[in-house]
Amino acid sequence: MSKQAERAAVEADLQRLIREGELYRIKVVHAKALVGNALQPDAMLHGAVEQAIAMAQARLGGLLQPGGLKSVNFKAMLPYALTVGSYIARKRLLKPAMGVALAAGLGMAWLLRRKPAPEQD
Image (cartoon, rainbow, N blue to C red; front, side, top):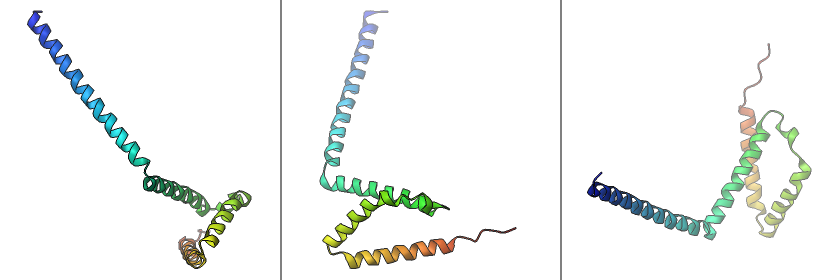
């Protein structure tokens, strides 16, 4: 191989390494921006609400399965119920909470009545 070909190969490797370094720096800046955005109070609240909704959906999905209420541990759920009840009483949200409970009850009744009756042979 001639010196000129070796020099061209080294130059190509150098340019590739420079591009990789630029890309790495861009990724670091992007990651810093993502972390900074994720640490904003509104983003943290949004994430917490999404996580709470996902947990509630998982719990309610288990309750809607046949025999779902048998697997509920009411002793374990009592602290959560007391916390929610205390919050509702403190913020004086009794009427809106009763409206939400009524709507949820009507929705559950509609879902349960919508299920087809089991077929008998």
